[in-house]
Length: 377
Image (cartoon, rainbow, N blue to C red):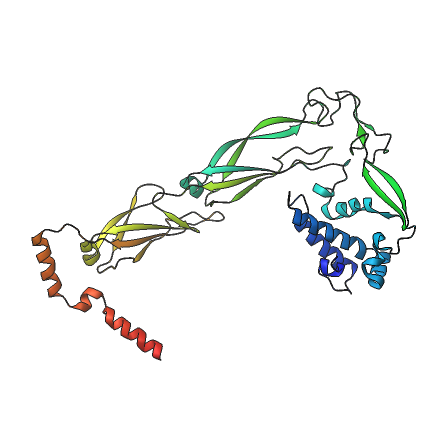
């Protein structure tokens, strides 16, 4: 059972012409087959939205639909087409209006934009952080240099198709009990191109495009992250009949680092310290991403999992100046394989200090008591 056309477009019955167009434009861009290749569900939703728009955007059809529902505009339901000659081929005008002559909305004999391309670029962690220039090779179709993309041999030109008069489409009218139905389909003589090439170019066999491998320089900006898309306008596939070239999208895949983890523009690093360093304090050498080390002071009495900070040693901002920070999580290591003398010294040390000194400012049990007191109000 067909859904209500107003429900399909998500507009009220009192919606004006502009509101209906905006609603359809949004759905068309979302579900267009060029945006969802191979997605049957999206294709059906696109057809449903287009059918709803075709009716609600036409005053006559909308009036019949408001009065009689689907039966008023569906020839299979015996509705009011009469001899009006409903033109299914007119959908191409709707596509052209909303998609500006690109993708699925193009007239086949008009300029066609080339396809977009995607390239997956693998980077080292440091290359993404500090930026790098890469040279990649892209196999793609380019305009034939011999015929300049026309497909015709040098000195000749494509001529208008005599069967379709250069429109690329032929129409047929079928009489039915409900009136005349006019349909349009690609011209069989020129295959929808609108022109005939009598002397095809030998270099591209009349296709107007040749396959080449293009070497392209990529400038990866500093601060780039995994999954970032870099768009190179005009570096995709060549267009047809004077259409612009598509774009190239370079998708970055960044390898993880052995030491550092990244979160936004900040770096995180785990550093082990001895029990004595944590208790007495120490100055340690922390590795940094650009190489070398920096000095970091571990305060006296530092507990395990404490996070210390090194300013401006993180990832450079991709836009603007400055860098993130390096966060160092201190992990206190416990001595192992102690001999008897070392064990005795630790026992004596433990007996010489209070539980509060060992556990910090509050003992474990004091913290539990505080939590219970807070919970009980």
